[in-house]
Length: 82
Length: 431
Image (cartoon, rainbow over all chains, first blue to last red; front, side, top):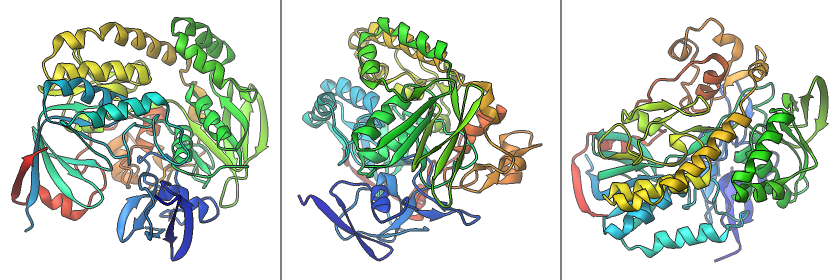
């Protein structure tokens, strides 16, 4: 198994340690890993880290997923602001 | 309409944390077909969470190998419960498919979640739960060089700080809301649980302060500083990240949806009611671990083992673990006495502080609401994607509002999965 995984976040290539969650990849992509914009326009990033708060929801290959519960896979396409 | 697969098993276990793993391993020698489902990518629960930033202890590997060793145990990771189409069936979903699972015995090991309380700035990127930070780091979140403040209550703060430090972060403060007397009393009580005392010593930290709580977090689009109140004095600390947790609250949603009776746990939080055999109020449904009241991993192992034996009719096996369970139940009670949340924490949110993060509902909008249902109907509090799992717990602490039993779908689900509630069934082999 490769030691790193290459995925794309909003079209930008991001390389992470193999086995990393998409939440970790959002952070590697820059800033504090903002995943979505709230109903009043605030940036929100992963918060509970364990699949409860839904703040880290993103689209992964077109499917709505929780970034904290999803492991990065080679070539994955992640879109924020899901 | 596409047919929905219908699978069958003798024992269905929801949750692959310590309780769920122990239940499966205890039930396995009976030869029953056992399915364990869990929404995490790998078994182990929150404490034994695997990932590039995790160092799994040998015990975790041992339990995981035990699961793999039994041919009659099947683990479905990345799987969530969506609904209960009938009294002996659950509708499940993973990343690619939905299916229905019929069971003869059901063991709920749904664990606990962190109690996350609102304060000004808690929605800023960079604020996470304390256990949440641990989970994110284990899953590869890089924090090397970051200045981190950990705040809230309970031993989990020290564990989170230790994980962050091991990952290269600088933990600049650990703010515990309980008093020095309460924490010292807890430390002194650990003589009854020597393993815990050793663990506590390894977690000791020079930045630990008691009677200390968050006032607010400041920053422009991300965390830049935190204001803390220690005793009567306020101070501001520059930092990159704030991890907060105010103890744990049992995940009772699935049990409640199935109509299992609740009981008040030691913390005052609601937990699934169980008897000496870990049976819930409903026939064939058992519960073990944190969903029956927060009490730590050893208690979860003992309860899970008893539930696993009881579910396959091995009363002798179950009875052998009663003393162990009692020992750790006493530890849980001590933990709750020592880290009771101060009523002053109810003053943390200001009128414009968001309580519901999904629907951006501020505290001021909840003034005058008569209860949780009123707040949902008229203010949209709890109507978002988390379905009140964060703000419902906060509202329970702030106002004493108890959320009613959840209705399906239990978690956000795909339309194709929900269609399975009406679709024709395609009977598949026993799992």
